[in-house]
Length: 456
Image (tube, rainbow, N blue to C red):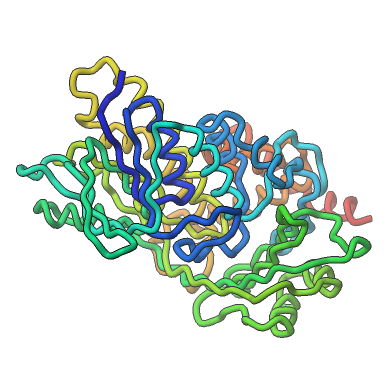
């Protein structure tokens, strides 16, 4: 039984594509509206400027997409994505300690470009006869019912410049910035949502590089973390589906990675270790270098509304934007879409299934967002450049994070648990359980001796 005749999804990024799949079976017709003309192949597009930068699919994101798209990760790998164990072919260098050792953790990680992720998802949606795609169209507004208490339609501009309107029982805003929702709230007399903002001023530069077969890195992923509070420089090498690598670099505040290859190589020398620089000495740049700025983490507290309009759903970055260096944005959107699918399925026998739907989604998603926000906030707040509220126990929390990283070097069980939390397979609370905390403290006390043993 359908919950409505038509649902309209605004935005064809990963969040919008996942949301469209989540709506299948609950609405007779689903219309996906996207401002960009969507490419026929796996490539970056103008509406996703960060799409030219490295994108790691966290295992928690893969799990949600697998549930939505029926083994999405296999389809992604069939299209060329690389998959390996998170503890193998991945070198992670924290500050002021040795890299995590290679271990078989039993946690698969998928590596590819953002363009490939979206292309495979679009291909899967094309098999759904209930989904229609309207690309090259700019949404100009969400239309309310006369009383302003529900959505009624979506207005958009065609490629020829004409204005058209499509009726909708449900409108899902996955546009990223959420402007259609914010304008709708203003137009219906509602206040803007309360927000939590953390100013981080991240600057990125990314090159695509090639290696000859004999110089190809032994790892699919090389990541050198920054060393707060002083050194904000970080680097990442990430294999792509075409066997080239992303070479991405970040810095904060007035400091920014350069946009010319010789200068970018010099920047690589300023990382905490020479690992990435040594590898890049054998690389050749392919194409131009792209830059991107990310000013702030932002969370909109839609859950605090008491008069939310019926049939309006917000998802992904429009709710919460995280520092993209941690790869959590796509995971949050995919998890929200999965929660939405299950909520819709549970309401099929209700007389008014759309009443309170978004409120229920926010209640279910809030623990997920709380967890991701905390995971993202802690490392960002460690830098002087970050403007945000630091908790009273902040220094203790930073100290425990350092001990956790040390313990992960020494103990395979802690290593796996840290990866599960970082990957959004388990909540951060799993690392704060009393027996785990005691073990981490014990292992950290032995770290210097264990480090000497590992380096011997």
